[in-house]
Image 1 (cartoon, helix red, strand yellow):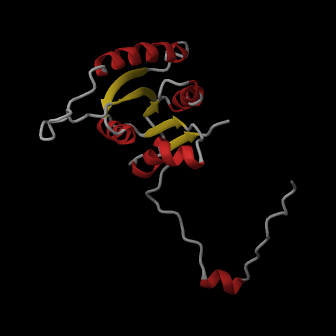
Image 2 (cartoon, rainbow, N blue to C red):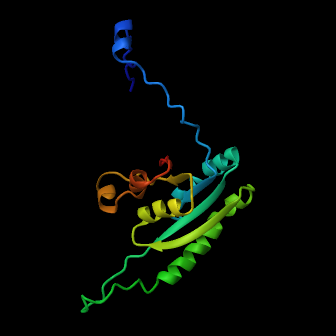
Length: 178
């Protein structure tokens, strides 16, 4: 499908006088991240962000922090509505399994020489945990891969990438589904 060329807009001198182009602010400076938070859900889709994040880290001399968040949905015990919520009984094992899978996934980074640390944490809301982790660990950039869900799947399952984009206090680099 051929698309028409973009419309060309020409400004006259009177237009330029009425709508001046704002000057760039003097305090604006180029982004040079020192610590990049690379998130992973341990899927193959998440691995798409690894190589570009490593390249960015090499380019800027930055370190990586590879994070996996295990979703921990506390539940109220049946028949005890006033009891405090309890964590999933399999949470510790899930975290151990996630650490093993993260060790496998980060072997790609081992070969590059880029300094990195890795973490597995548990939280009830994955996106908020990523945003909080970036803030608490002074990360300058969040890199992640999007699964590319749309329509009903996105409505039903939500979009962690979108929530991170909306709530992060640092730039977010999203690698779309290919």
